[in-house]
Image (cartoon, rainbow, N blue to C red; front, side):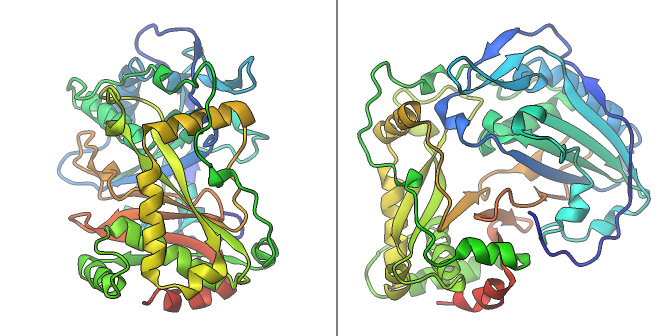
Length: 433
């Protein structure tokens, strides 16, 4: 995130020339279809997975990861290809089997220098992934890159940069676990189902619902100027089980809602506090966007191992004044209603809406929350046990916040959020009910 604050940077990394890792078997050529659910999220998601040294020697980590990547790419072959524009003007994958860029690197430090990566360190962690900052557009960036960085202690970091148009969180975890199984010489527990035709638009598109995520909002509060003129500070906030339980009781005390999940509660709490922290005018329209997974809600359900994006953005929209004046429970209720709206007919309508309009979600006055609390990125075992730490390098856009799992049991929730410094100064206090 441009302008992101980070105290110090003690990490020095020497990178070597990347090599291309091709699928171990001949794969399909031609074009690979991306659905309308894939089209609007062609952004690069860099992640790091930290493996500490133990009794299992990791001297050959790069070679094991490289060979197993080649084998798993025979199943996930679209990753070994490139993104282009199809005849219909939409993104499509040109399958060539050219391979995935694999970079080896060395850090002249112990892995402990990274500290707690749940605290945002985009400059430091950015050195542990192979990215293309000079690329003019997303078409010039590989769909997947891998970097393995060895540390003096014998530990290593696996850095992965993946284009979101290829996979949602569930598919990304399944790819990582499949790669890890391959590295341990095991068959794939969940082979990928690559055909995305189930999400093709209908022959006669039918838009049956309003899709407010595309609504253009006027910036009457000069939010854009605030982000441009001030330093952006990114912080993480931890919510343990005890805190979440207390917040739920406080949210339900006035009877507006009778139940809520951690997910709906924190969505509403962060949206409300952020709007106040940015000092939005009462008549400023504000949106909350978040993705809902509906894999099991289709009739018939999606094939096991569906590879792609099977989530759809849903939306809450109201004025900042209404959001601030009404109790938190009212915001929670809006979130609950937005979730209930997302059935198969709504998803079909959203797919057709994009087919007709080619619209992109407007982010003015908007908070977009991405939720990884049920995604077990940390569980992949390549032969050296599970990762000790795992997480994103940074947030993709200034309007994005992330919920990440935290703690040994992964039941606590870590909020990752960036705000202009003046807003961040007051945001923590506004998070209190």
